[in-house]
Image (cartoon, rainbow, N blue to C red; front, side, top):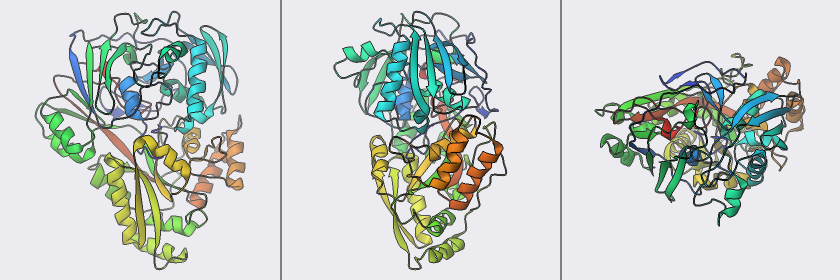
Length: 522
């Protein structure tokens, strides 16, 4: 979720998914479960061909901020836990429990080894978590990480900066882990060839083009495999197809059996293709527009922020980019959150005439030029052009600053922008929703440069142990309602296409809703 980076509008991706039927389910319980279900595997021994929409750079487990890197390597590297069929199951972690408001104790399975035979221990967890934080992972949830205290080889204590159970579970399902020894032994710290504990071994990787994964015969986990650990095919051949028309040709020709996160612009054509099963999954991802709250024209001018907000039509974005496979988001928060209140409605809806009135009130009757930072590919690029058109109709000249997804976080940090796409995932409780918007990093600013003392008096009280009360949540909602620093837009669906007899795909419910690629079944 992220995700979650503000530039990854589709980051990240969500809890509460029923992957076998493509229907949303209720929010998962926070009760831990160390027992994994027994899953019958497909022993056909086939080669699975997969197409993903975006390429990426680098193969290290550290700073896996691009969701397509995650989808590619989430069965080479592993996470502590996974969320499947309404509950959490252990992957590397056998047991976990909350010791106090901020501390969790986790016990690893015995005898975990990576593909080079290196033992995976609690020290490797500490090294991986520290490395992610040092690398500056773009998903705001990682700023909730405090420290890992190693108790012994299989036991550690994880201290967080929040008492939110949801933060622990999101870290548990998102953080890809590896052994320090594998990284130290690698000439480039695994930057060009991954080494992990997962059921697949990467045998070939061509940056920006393709990746081949091969089933391990020496995988450490032998029984009671969760879906995330399944290896139903011997070989997975992954290609990256960012151009929508090319992806359409790849799908309808039968050259791949799975296409993940397919661009919605080709959905009708894929729907009508013979022998292709399409799945539109309402995954709960929230998407919005964030304002730069430091040193820009929008920063200290609420009327200008309102003018921009009134000018944008969420339904128009949904119809044009997602062919209707999304719903307008008209509240602050997600219904998957245990403490969500449907009364937290946004005070703004599409009204172009109101946008012009607010622009005059803001002091710009003749218009103003602003900058939108956006990914330069896929849905983000399409959304940006539509937003540019809506703003232009209201008298606001919007300059598009396109960046490669890999450099998006750095561009945001430079601060030379006014608005940007923003999204989030995995809302088990509202602390994760507000944290994605307001959490500060080591720069003492949020990703969108919030630094209002009045805001942080409320937010800091909310973050304290016991502070997540209905009263404090209401104050956060009222602050955002009154100040308009983040505009909710829509909740999108994700789109998958399957062929070659494959009927089911197990998804990583907490990050991008991309598949555990080896777990596709017939």
